[in-house]
Amino acid sequence: MSSVINKEIEAYLAIRNRLDFYKVAELLNFTPHTGQKCIFDTLNEGNFETLIATLGRRFGKTTAIGKIAAGELLCPFASVLIIAPTTQNAKVLFSQVYQDILALNLKIDTKDLKGMTFTLKNGGRLQVVTGNNYDAARGFHFSLVIYEEYTFIPHLREIFDEVISPAQADYGVGENGYQNSKTIMIGTPTYEGTEAHYYFRQGTEGAYKVDGVVSFSLPTWTNPLISKEFIETQRKKLDKESFDREYGAKWSKISSGKIYHNFDLDIHTVSRDVINEAIKTKGLWLAGVDLGFSDNTAYVLAFVQIGTGNIYVVAEYQAAQRPTSEHYNSYKALEEEWGVGGDGLPIYRYGDPSCAQIWADLANDYKYLVNPAYNKIAEGVKTVNNYFAKPQLFISHECKSLIAQVDEMQWKDPEKLVVSRGKKVGHYDLAIAALRYMVATWDKIGQYEVIIV
Image (tube, rainbow, N blue to C red; front, side):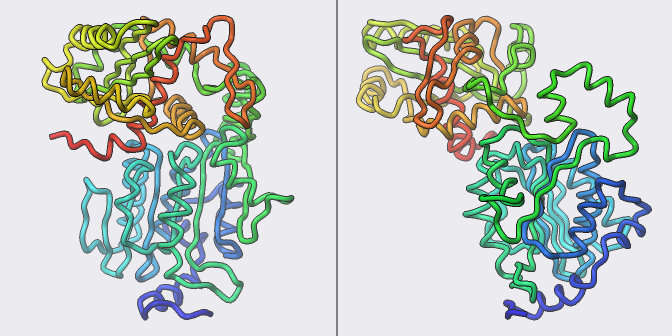
């Protein structure tokens, strides 16, 4: 065994190398079902660095994660990190592990329930974060990292490669040549070509195989507690591709070329009444602007609900061949119509970064602030798709042009990011770009700079 950083990690390894997760499950009066046994067997064998399991809905992911994390924390000086896509997911997981720790009679030393972390008398530590506040995990080392619903975690490659993996190296390398610190990615599959699929295929046979990565897919029906009647009901309700993905644990191909393939008219478009209820809650305002000259200038206004993270697009504006002053008057009119400024809530506007001089003029002439947007197209598109998938992005029925653009826009050449516009989407309708500027910049930068009192 290679050297490790201190005696605490040596003490951890002495117990971890003898840990049997089936015995942990027995202590917790839990019997893993057929599908869960595949995960437990791999953990007990230990011949991997990263275990990636794509699972059908109702598989029992949360329960299994709770038992695995609790078992790891039986080892002195274990350090477990769980990363979830949303705050709600994170709270559920933290609660599950916390209950299992109490059931194992492990003594808690310190706890921060709001911060979703605790330490144990045996030196162990649990921390649960979301894909949007993963920076809270910096400065610690981890013996086990679990990415729950990893297919929906934003910035997955950045988190895994640049932030978390280096924090696992402290636990050293075992005699089998694999890192002692293990990674588990677990969740329902989405689409081929995503960041999540990039990691999954590293554990499959073929050109993409990476040593130390194990991947497998387990459909819902590997859980014997789910009835055949339920499965057949879902099969009839869903189209074949959706059923195969959601319950058969199969990755879907993006065959249509649709850019925002996670957008669903029934799910993501909402009434004025829904919008009005949302803006009664705690939140702030966002705006996205794509400036045109002979082309359209497009503007979208949205409300961000603090707590859920939901974004509600409430209004749109598009016009061509007008002076900047007229565009400004239109922006302000929409904002005043929705009470922006008068309600005391802040607004953050993000616009085409190539128009810095225009934004400077607006700031100087009208005290109207527009910040340069984050404008990496591929990443921005993925971010918007992620918000639709969660779902955390909704568009008012009144934004008809934006809805048509999101629903109709196709890739003509996905590799070169060339757009092919359908019949409903004119060449100069660019509200979709304003939406991407707004959502991608808020996700990447904005939400980390804003403190809501």
